[in-house]
Image 1 (spheres, rainbow, N blue to C red):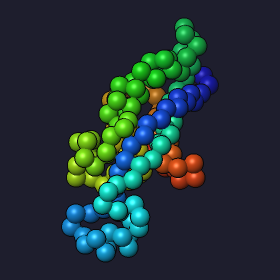
Image 2 (cartoon, rainbow, N blue to C red):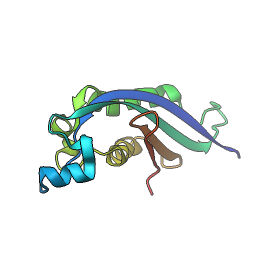
Image 3 (cartoon, rainbow, N blue to C red):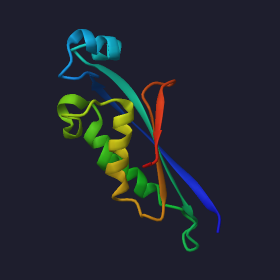
Length: 137
């Protein structure tokens, strides 16, 4: 049976600040540069959720993309869109909201709703040229 990958794109806008509370402002700037400025900064994040699996013979789907659209809206867009990730999102109260960490949080939020027979990968664009991918490994 062929395995096919389906993709759903979404986006959200959010602010964040990369810093460690236990470091001085100087060290934070040395490591995170402008991303450590105390007044935060924002991104227009682009998200791609990819699911890979066998095609269901009855529906012709790997996964219903309408259901995936709704899942992303409820679990990710409503939680992150127009939020300050450091302040408004519980997952990042003690975790630096780097693109890497955001992708893992998104993966974990969605994975619990996706059937285990499907492989999942998250691709998160922080800018058009900076992006990360995470597949649970």
